[in-house]
Image 1 (cartoon, rainbow, N blue to C red):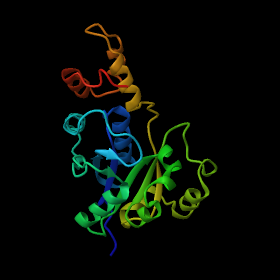
Image 2: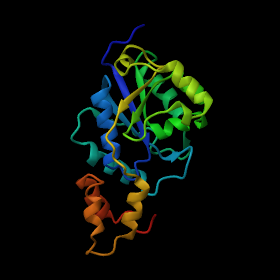
Image 3: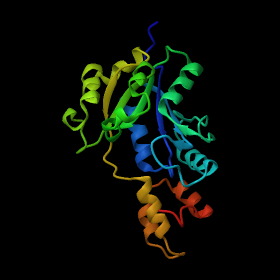
Image 4: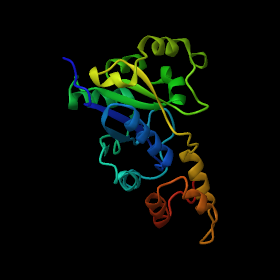
Length: 229
C-alpha cells in the first residue's frame, strides 16, 4: 500500500532537560524542509545510552508545553516519559507502529552527530524497517561518509533519498535537510543555571538567547538546576 504524500509524522526524541532554542530550531527546520504533517516530540525518562535527566518528568513536560504551545504542528507524546526502565528507539518505534500501523510514514529526526553513532543504537539495523531517518546538517557539520563507520556509511549510501520522497513510503530511507547553526546544549545551559548567583545575575541575559522566555521563567520560578551541572 502506497502512503499519500503529506501523511508523514516526524519523531523527535530526547531528554529535553531543558528544552531550548536549538531543539525548536531543528524541529522547525524539519517542518520547513520535509513533507511532514506534524512533529511528535518524544521526551524520555531514562535514556538507554546515557545518564538520566536532572529535572523531573512533570517539570520537563511543563517546559515542553510552554515551548511548543504556539506551533499547531508540534505534539507531545508522553508515553515514555513516565517509564522507570531505559528507553530505546527500537521500542519507541515498535510501539508507534502498533499504534499507527505499518503504512504511515515515520521520520526519525536526528542531528549529524547522532548519525555517526547510529551503529551503537539498540538493534540499529532493524530501525530501517520501522522508520525513515532525517539528518539535520548545520553549516560546518555536513555529513561526510569518511567520518562514520563503514556499516553506517554503507547504509547511508544505499538508503539516501530526496527529502520530498519520504511521504510516499513508510520507512527505509535516509534524507538530509538544512538546519540553522545554533550551538546550544542542555548541558551548557544547566551549567549556566547552576552558576547563577542571587537576584543580580548577568548570565540570565545570555540565557534569554538560548531558551524560550516562558521556559526560563518556569526554571527560575521552580529554582531548577541551581545545584546541578
